[in-house]
Image 1 (cartoon, rainbow, N blue to C red):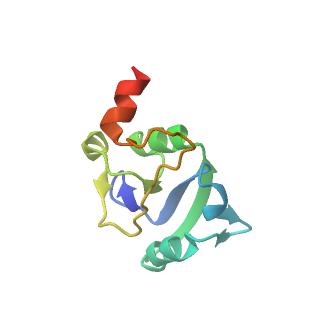
Image 2 (cartoon, one colour):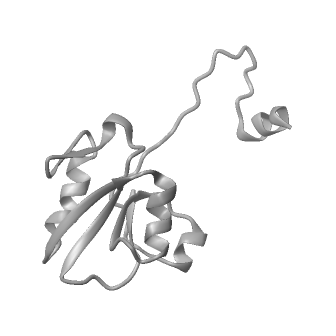
Length: 118
């Protein structure tokens, strides 16, 4: 996970959080909850100003960052096209994903899965 900044931060920081984090991160009653709580707290503890948090769907979250409607957007994948409108931080939290399948096909490589999808 990294954070992305849309522009220089003003006196009160608006933090956008994706509503699509499942149980790994929730924001309620001015508190973060879930396994990603410590990563978010790490970022927020570094702020020298007051902040508000909004929770929005991921697509809206990215659009708000692009339109300078939020100061910080967390979490976001690192993608080159986002570098065109945001400044990324160093990696704060890294997640690995694995594919688990009932398939009898032993070749679960990305290349083979793409071939099967076409």
